[in-house]
Image (cartoon, rainbow over all chains, first blue to last red; front, side):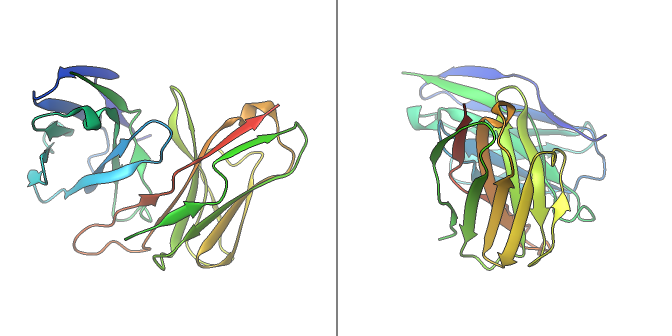
Amino acid sequence: GESVGLHLPTLSVQEGDNSIINCAYSNSASDYFIWYKQESGKGPQFIIDIRSNMDKRQGQRVTVLLNKTVKHLSLQIAATQPGDSAVYFCAETRNNAGNMLTFGGGTRLMVKP
Amino acid sequence: DVKVTQSSRYLVKRTGEKVFLECVQDMDHENMFWYRQDPGLGLRLIYFSYDVKMKEKGDIPEGYSVSREKKERFSLILESASTNQTSMYLCASSLLYRGLSGNTIYFGEGSWLTVV
């Protein structure tokens, strides 16, 4: 079946550096992608989303890049701060899937002061 | 601001007990979901509902049931709790159809259930 996965389970970065979290998906019919941030003991929080008709979308300090050719998604966080330490999930859905999300396993981002 | 509220954050129950986890959303969303989250296994869908009194099984429905009597409320029921149901349970909601701008699914803060 389809799956969404993350390349690295843990990413450690220095405060102030940029972070890049990667995600691969296998279903070429996926047309909508979301990144979530989950802090310890809390539920996932929406960060940013992107539709398949775009290859880049920017938010506040975050950018999502989508490469449909290789079915790859990335989340870039600029000037990483200690408050960015969390687990990050990518998720995908398809328009004909009843708005059901398929989640990746998560990447833990650790920010070193 | 969007809000999905799970009434119980931490529960400890005994094996064999009946457990109710309640979730309320204030966004008038049609879809509501129950996931469980376990280390190394990520988020797994237990049940979802796209309308009042409607329910659909997710990937791991065994040992669980749900109730959707009102649009804003979605309950997860463990008829007879077992130790392998110790987990974090997450409720979520979304619109039924995705609009032009996408369709985010919003999560509650989670309910930590320990079955002893």
